[in-house]
Image 1 (tube, rainbow, N blue to C red):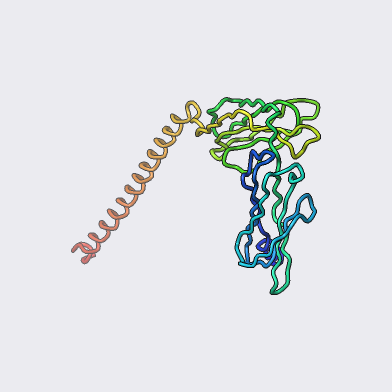
Image 2: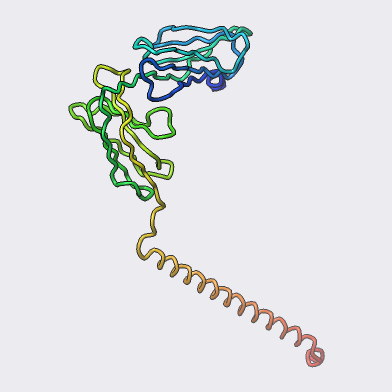
Length: 252
């Protein structure tokens, strides 16, 4: 377990800038963030070594920039680093996809059901349609939140089960045509999901008030019984004390 935690701490992280909407010919930068000082950083593309850099200044982040990206630059990337003392190679980072947006493909359609305002705990359905493998994007997230390949149809159905306030936000879709995994449509129109607190069921408020009244009455009754019992005890004790202190008691 300790070795597993150590390996996890040594793992670098990789980020892509810009993270969405990259077109052929754009400038792209891959940033490898290092959790400790490293002498050399390697970059892999599609499980093959792509390039590497000496980290002479021992920077916490090493950048790999592509000017005028080409088809051959598309793919899945990882980074990895080496330390010299003691000699060690880290785990590979999280994978990052570099996908080109082709504006020749029409953007997908999108719909939300129920529309916009829904109560917490409701199941929400988002439909996206066109042709290919669909990706559901949420504003503020660099990677798609869901993916679906509706084989034999042109509509993907994404379901958000029992939504919470964390699910609120703006959603969009994109798709990748069959046979072109690293080629994507642009993001389509957006839908906005707003999550509201669940309303109190009819009669629940009256019920809760009734329960409160019952609890108060029971509390008052218990206090009254306790008070009367204490009064009789004290009164009886006072009576016996007076009896013991009376002259009649002494003469008996």
